[in-house]
Image 1: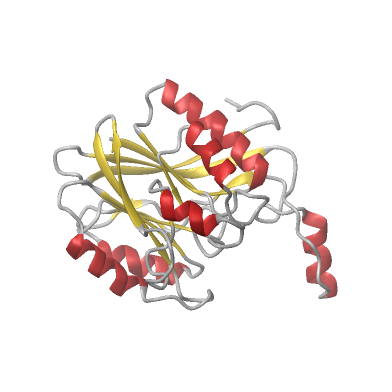
Image 2: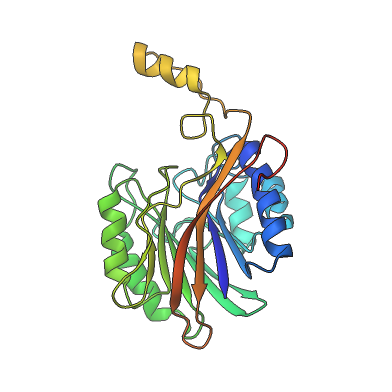
Length: 264
């Protein structure tokens, strides 16, 4: 089973290149499942029902969220009824929605878990305690992919070691900067600290450059709009062994477009 997992989709440029790339990879039978972080899909912050349906129609099997989970109006009702969207599992128990889901792929079931980090982010329940409890009550069988939306690289690396041998893969998101440390950990878990960003390439982590520069130089508040122009899709391709559900390989992926068409 080959899985594409995509870093934070940012605004319309990110949605555009996501559609192009997934269409090609599906047509080539290069992937059998697609997971994407969509917490920046709506103008850079949150997700709406219409945009979720757009991404599902483009080929996503599961959409994960993060610290912007409740930014858009109506997300609470959306995640409560749409099991293909997973909000962080370690949010307070009273929050609507679910933190994990199992979906069917052409090669069998796949379980996806979303977790939110605690370092440099708003307070949530402990992600380490949360995932331990989840793994105890999850049905045995389907391979488990954990997407850890966290700021600190140390927290993400620690989660990889914490789950090594217990899940198929642990991949990080949130910083919008792809790391180069993809690896199979000693007990067989595929790991990458950060998937990167799927959004405008000529930007500051997806936003127009000039307002961000003014903010840094002057210290004054500024409105950060999603940048326009060419986009990049970043993420990882994970190959799982079907009989064991363990990772065979993990490789970074980075694809670009020219503002309209995917580049070869």
